[in-house]
Image (cartoon, rainbow, N blue to C red):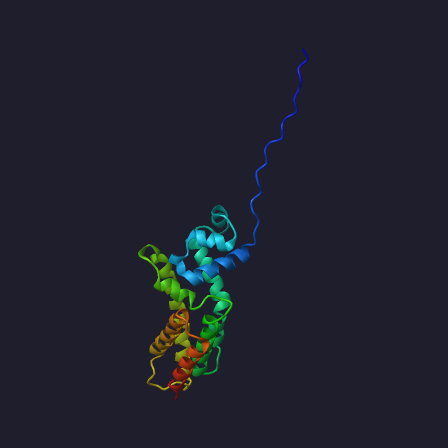
Amino acid sequence: MESTVLADAPAPTRGRPREFCPEAALGAALGVFWAKGYDGASIADLTAAMGITKPSLYAAFGNKEQLFHQALDRYEAEKLAYTREALKQPTARGVAEHFMRGAVAAQTSSCDPKGCMGVISATACSAAADSIKAHIMERRASSNAALVARFEQAKTEGDLPVHVDPQGLAHYLYALLQGMAVLATSGATRADLDRIVDLSLSMWPTA
């Protein structure tokens, strides 16, 4: 009997990994972290918003903490650009106004979640996410140092009264910014926050 030689059956092909745009996926993750904070954003929330699977998230971005850091980098680069421009203003009052007006615009945008991503994540961190809170505080300390240096310059130039404490003034401004962020997440309108800015500027120390 002649033997029949069977051709090798083709090996089953695996489904190709789902392709996605990393930039778009990171933007979607940013939105989730911004809206829910680090603790509130689950892996399921993130993968659903990003349109990818959990293995794809880990392969492209690392773990949840690494993804948050990348999202925070993007948030600071894109959404907090006004803070860098604020430091270039010619007067201390101009610096403060640029900070506050920029924050109001960012925190009440109709295109983004309300409030400040850093404030939301830092204030809602559990003990298990202490490293996230510490990282946010480290970034905030760097920003604070730059603001204090700018106010010290203003004091040297005679733009601020000699009795003003630059560090205390920076803390005052950050307290206003964080308070407005909390109000924004609670439903305060842009007009509500603009009134706070107007009142704060009316009391700003001038030489």
